[in-house]
Image 1 (cartoon, helix red, strand yellow):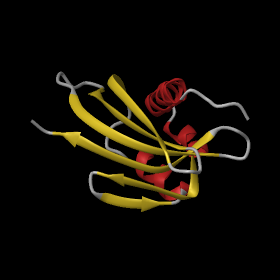
Image 2 (cartoon, one colour; image 1 turned 120 degrees about the vertical axis):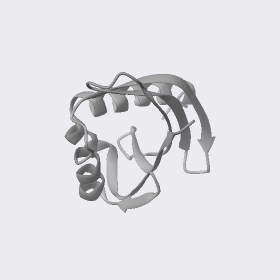
Image 3 (tube, rainbow, N blue to C red; image 1 turned 60 degrees about the horizontal axis):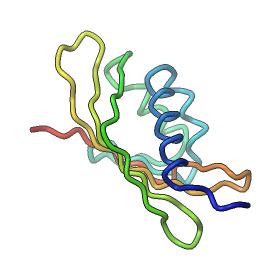
Image 4 (cartoon, helix red, strand yellow; image 1 turned 180 degrees about the vertical axis):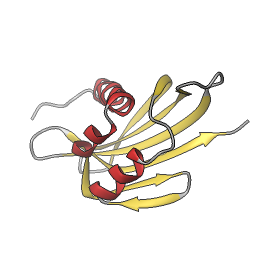
Length: 126
């Protein structure tokens, strides 16, 4: 397998993740595995079904993520990647955006793609 550019991989992942989140949250299931963990505003959730249940039960139906920054680093001998995202979240019908930060620890799959091993999400209150 040729060495992938971490910046290109992280940028493509971020675009895919947030466009899927904004249009079809159930579609995020394929990005997680049973060992995956999400920490959402301090609440720890593990496993694909539990993570998708949390994301689909959020108290808003429509939203739009506007990404400000994406930083990434290679992580460990297993060719993982840390991806740190900051941006604004616009909820349908709301005038003001919410600032958020999210960190993903991506791990490679045998098929040559990546899955989310760890996902930490926080709203940033001023």
